Image 1 (tube, rainbow, N blue to C red):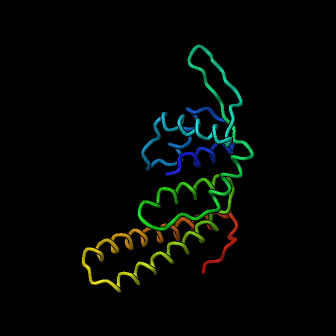
Image 2: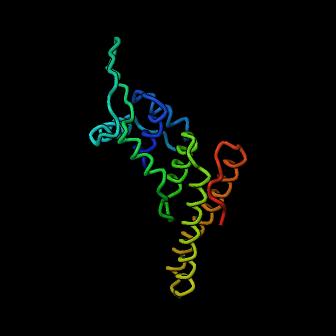
Image 3: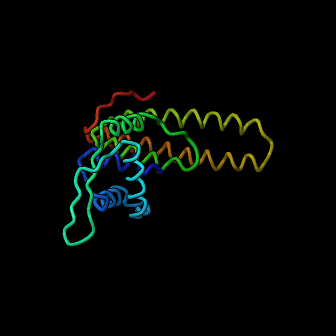
Length: 179
């Protein structure tokens, strides 16, 4: 999971405090384990060290200091590169797939194009696995491949459903026709 990238996506919508970032994240991903505040502040510290965010305001009103952060131009460029890159197909990629699609959609990006490109990556991975599966007689190897293929199949169904939903809303152009 790329918490830092998701936080950059939220900050791309406007400056926010760590508490607000956690709340926005947890609201956007209701089926996902909520972020710990420690994760948020650790990610913000690294993002600030890397020059991707900057503190824009610190206020202390009868309690602990609250620092608002904003994304820098370098942070926007980093976020754009992340949104443009496909994820490797395989086990546990679904969380990042969902996060990237939702972040692109929230920012008005080409979520449908990303989902179509990701579908091609998954199809290529599935083709390679099926070729490998047919070439092996090892039952344990086939079981491992079966597990991965079934997850890829589920991801492919989700990619198609999510893309259809995005296109049906008319909120994103279909810049990439389905192969």
